[in-house]
Image (cartoon, rainbow, N blue to C red; front, top):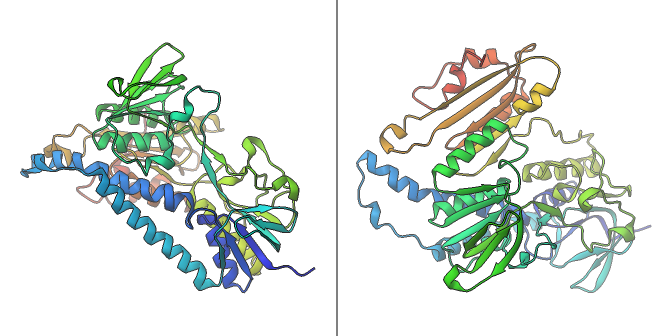
Amino acid sequence: MAFDYDLFVIGAGSGGVRAARIAAQYGAKVAIAEEYRVGGTCVIRGCVPKKLFHYAAQYAEHFEEAKGYGWAGQENAQFSWEKLIAAKDREIARLNGLYIKGLQNAGVEICETRAELTGPHDIRLVAEERTVTAANILIATGATPFVPHNIPGAAYAITSNEAFHLKSLPASIAIIGGGYIALEFASIFNGLGVDTHVLYRGPQILRGFDDELRDVLAEELAAKGVTIHTRADVDRIERCGPERGGYIVHTRKGEELAVAEVMYATGRMPNTFDLGLDRAGVELGGNDAIKVDDYNRTSVGHIFAVGDVTDRGVQLTPFAIREGHALAERLFGGKDTPPVSTENIATAVFTSPELGAVGLTEQQARERPGDIDVHAARFRPMKHTLSGSAEKVFYKLIVERKTNKVVGAHLIAPEAGELIQLMGVLMQAGATKAHFDATLAVHPTAAEELVLMKTPRP
């Protein structure tokens, strides 16, 4: 059977774009469909604009700290939310253009429309009112913010999508959730002067990270002015007059919180709704994620899926990119590229201060056979001896005693995202604590403590 395309990609996010571009470079006839903007969640309404907002939110703190170093006049600095939004929009438009240019240069056909499967090889291009066929199909539609339908008034809340397009900066906000998206936006709004509250139904924020790291971050956020409400299960959201703020969040404990804006950040759902996957025979797993094997193959042999839409459980842009690249190499490059490993994936949480983690938490390491050593330090960095800030740095290394390998690294520090990238390289290389001990310190830096922690905790 002759097909219109060798590969048709549904979703022009990071993973889909990479797969399409690499496949086309290998000579495949490729098309990609996107109903919004090329670039996906990360570029358009995720990692990139969030990091720009993260930078913006740090300046008030920098201005205050500068006083200790002899600078004056920062009190007259004025922040414009409108100018930040406009600058962000220009940068996103630039990146969107680069993604489009990259696809076009590779020879990929871009279809600006929603695409739905109508059969195992058939794709309906909704806006164009036509159907095309493909020998191979890749689903790369990502995920979308989850907002519960069983909470009265939940529809009043914004999500991370809308947060990037608010017309004005709210005076106060309640962010429902305790994961990295909730905490990053809490730091952003708090840094920009918003009275910020985090409502999390669990006992401590950032579930899944090292327990000690979670405790330290909660302390640091609270010290900067973020009010964290734990065991705060939301019962309903009530709309009220501006004299009371705009909204009242009611918890099941009977608490009431009046705020100008409410934001849901309670996770993301795979974007599989109404894609026609059932018509093609593609099976879904829990949470409506597409079931794939280690090679990103679905239950239908010629249909694949990468990124957040799958049940692989790693919702990180670089992971999706690597998956898309590997898939294109296997299908069209004649390469036996191995599955993308889920081991030792370094991650950063862009709160203030930043958090970085790679490898096992202390709790995970203790559940495995064999003894471990834990090296940890929390201290005030040199910068803050004059700045007046009480912010502290926290470093933690988990060492497998039998092999002396560093199996976990957990950091809270300025630019922790930059540091944890290098720690990820060391972990992949199998670095031991002896390697750290043999490394000469770079002085004076806060990071030198990573090679100076000689004595484990008792």
